[in-house]
Structures are given as C-alpha cells and as structure tokens.
Image (cartoon, rainbow, N blue to C red; front, side):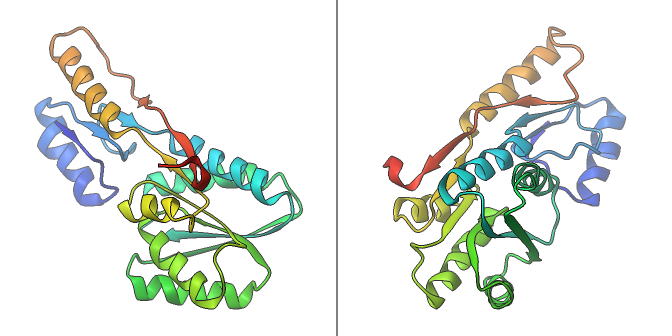
Length: 219
C-alpha cells in the first residue's frame, strides 16, 4: 500500500492491524508517520526544509528582529520537523526573537491568532507559516493592518494558495517539493520489494528534492 501518512491514531491502527499484521508493506508518501508500522517513507526531509526557510529568512531580513511562527494545532510530524529545523537555525542568532502560536486551519481562527500575535509583538519583521493551509489567512490579516511588502513572509507549497501568493509577491519565498518524484520512487521501491530486490526497505526513508523558490524567481 502506498499512502499519504496521516498523523492520527486511526491511521496507526489501520497500518498495524489491517496491513502489517497481514504482511502487507505500507509506504508513506509526502507525509510521514514514523511511529506507525509503515515500512518506509518517501518524500521531503522536513527538518531540512525548515532549515532552508530559516537560512533564507536570515539572508533577507538579517540577524535582528521578531519572527512569528504560525502552526496548525494538529501537531503533525511533518510540521514538528519543519519547526525544529527553523529553530535550529534561528536559535543561533541572539538578535532574533521567536513567537510561536498554534491555531486550527479555519480562516477565522487563523485571523484571530494573527491579531493576538501582532498586538503582542508590533515590532515583528517576519512570518513563517509551518502549515501552508494557514498562509492565505495569515497574509490577509497582515495586509488588513498594513502593507505586506515591508514584511518577510515564508511558507511551503502544500497549498495551491501559496504558489499564487508567491507569484503575486505577497509571500517572499516557499519550499517547493517534488510530488512527481515521490510517486515514481514510491512505486519503484514497492516493485523492488515485491520482487525481493530491495529487502529490507530503509526505515529512515528516502528523501526527494526540495528547493527554495523566491517571489522574484518568476513563474
């Protein structure tokens, strides 16, 4: 079975009792659930993706300023890895202050969280949406208060809204992933496993290409 991982107890139970117990290998693609009994993962190195965004932010903003990290309160593994990667870089700069908040992906909840964060940290210079589904509402609230251009704003390509916002210059950069490569590699590994050519599959996973796309890079 090749499936996008869901970081839920129901998903773990399905992998454990409906697949692994019958000897059916499960490969998670795009989003990993490492504490399930999946055989391997194919997709982005989310920790590295977080580091890439943080390095780009430092290059653009400099080494001083408040940065707001906005995450989904579902606390999925991929998001935790992104945030850990971001902190591993930004934490090295004493002049950078981090404000972290979690919210549901509902637009009104994102806007409410942003209002609270911006009221408490009016000197904020940059924003990172760890879950791309938060990005559109986040940018909307920033734009409602002031011009978006003075801020440094970053996200990931999990939502089609983010690509449009990057194209319009309302988000400064996003991490682009490689979904087609994920699919091809996932099928290739599954076939190799079925033929006995790739035993065992690497439990640490197989990482596909990621790259930083900036607003001024063009379409």
